[in-house]
Amino acid sequence: MKSKYCIQGRKLLSSYCATHGIFHKQCGKIIIANESQENDLMDLFQLGKSKNMAGLSLLTKDEISHHEPRIMGSLGLKIDSTGILDAHALMNSFYQDSQTLDHDYLYKSTVLDCTIISNGYEITIQSPASELEKVRSKWVINAAGLNSDLISQMILPKNKLPELIYSKGYYFSLSSRWKDKFSHLIYPMPDKEHRSLGVHLSFDQTGTSKLGPDAHFLENRIEDYSMDESLLNHFFEEASKYIIGLNKEDLSPDFSGIRPKIKNDALSFEDFYIAHESEKGFPGWINLIGIDSPGLTSAIAIGEDVAAWIYES
Image (cartoon, rainbow, N blue to C red; front, side):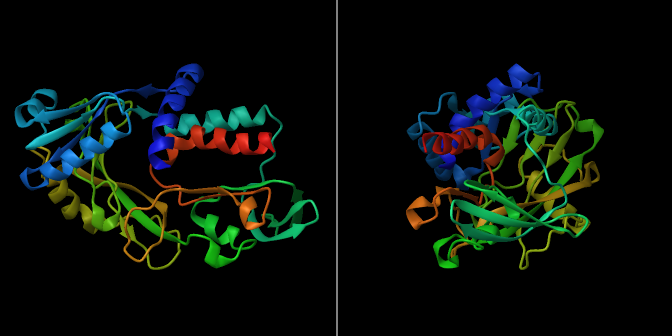
């Protein structure tokens, strides 16, 4: 599903941004491998081709330097279709679209309980004023991110659902001397141990560059977004493997985020869990659990499929 929705979602997202005047740029990405990782990079290349991805090409060491003079690696995989966008403007545009469709939002509210009723579900919600409200609906789309598994467990048996683990990632920004120095996003080989894409280099519409995220599995489910400045050395070491001339003084703490990842014993990569739970005996209940990367890229494609399930019913 991640492959399907990422490829489909990228096209829809690019079209949406163009139509709604949201900043987006198809800058491309280069995945960098050292000599010991070349076979793994070739596997990625073949995987991309098997998904019928266009714009894939292998780069030699000299070709990497030609495209990105400040980047080093023994072998590269160039992906032309990758791009960047203004995520905040995208969220605001989604919100404005929703407002025109007469949707209601209950901010700073907590879902306390879900129960099955004769024609759907009843959701008990606690408002910011601590008042309890009950909402009844034939359909429920559980897209609750970090708490999506817990909310689903209010209705479905726990053993029928995936369980989430929190993965916290930090970002460090690069100093102004690195502004506008890169034309492609630069990724190391994926970090299989932590189920992440590794400490990679990206930039925004101003040309300001940042490193991250890394990945740290949290033992508890506390949303703590504080920065750990002691990680600066680790970020410098990882980024120095592919950025030429990077100094430790170029890095400064920026921000952190938490992703919901599906837990398994091996802590290996997991696919999205997207399901209309009618076959489990819960018609009208749709679960979206473990929507980590590439969730943002996939968003419109996922939304279209969910909407189609409802319309078809």
